[in-house]
Amino acid sequence: MRQLGLDLGGTDIKLALLEEDRVVDTATGPTRSEDGSPDAVLDRIVELGRSAGKVDAIGVSVPGLVDDDGCAVLFPNLHGDWVGVPVAAKLSAGLGHPVALLNDGHAFALAETRLGAARGSQDVICLVCGTGVGGGLVLGGELHRGIDDRAGEVGHHTVVPDGELCGCGNRGCLETIAGSRAIADAAGTATFTQALAAARAGEERAVAAFERAATFLGIAAANLILFVTPERVVIGGGVAEAGDLVLEPLRREVRRRAANVAPLAKIEIVAAELGPVASAIGAALQGSHEVVRSG
Ligand SMILES: [Zn+2]
Image 1 (cartoon, helix red, strand yellow):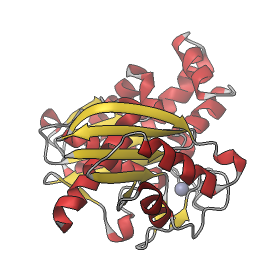
Image 2 (cartoon, helix red, strand yellow):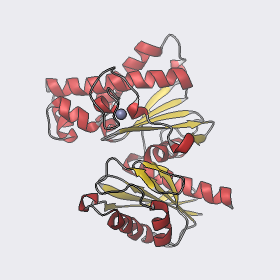
Image 3 (cartoon, rainbow, N blue to C red):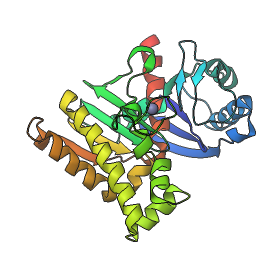
Image 4 (cartoon, rainbow, N blue to C red):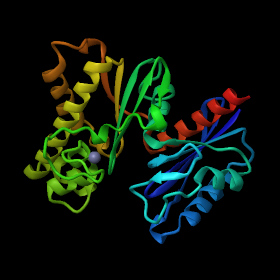
């Protein structure tokens, strides 16, 4: 089976082509949502998707929430008015094939569990730390999507009572501290890349920004671990590219808070393996899963 996965991101649209669950090709195109036209973005997804040729299943991961009919509800990190846009219908028509939609955190979790850092594990928690912080939960080898596909929103766990206002309307969400933009702000740099370079150079304010983000990620991870006792916790997204600058303080915080209760010796906290194309791979896996289920 040829499985096509497409991932609509804030900057890029990514493609992963799989054959029998093995990645055989990847590609990237620009999203350019700042042009303000959702239709133009959907056309770019269709164009990239068509470059894969004939396929048996298609999945598309999106950066937000969609309703039962595949219409956009909230795509907070894209420009333009997406609310109510029939994403699934337009992509299916353009690609000439039914399209399975899922959110990018879920797609990431599915991909890393089946083919990446958690392969072989049945129970997995994934944290995706980019501009926003997302997540996904796999239980018994199956993605847990939750009611209306809303499970996994770890970025909006309250970690600081009365903390900073989050885009969701709540205060003190994990995302307001551990998202890449929040880290850059705390480090006093214009971009996350600059914050990372400054932290690697030992610049005190940048080091503290990463330490703080990792500590709060550790608090969130400890809480999730205590509740789920997964075999693996996978940390991905742009923030995870900081490697041990994030992973070490995160693991330390988990040990500090959960070691006396959770079986931490049996729980690995690892970096993601599939890189920026993970959500496209997960979308491809979900697309073929739905083809098999409906067939
Ligand atoms: Zn929030």
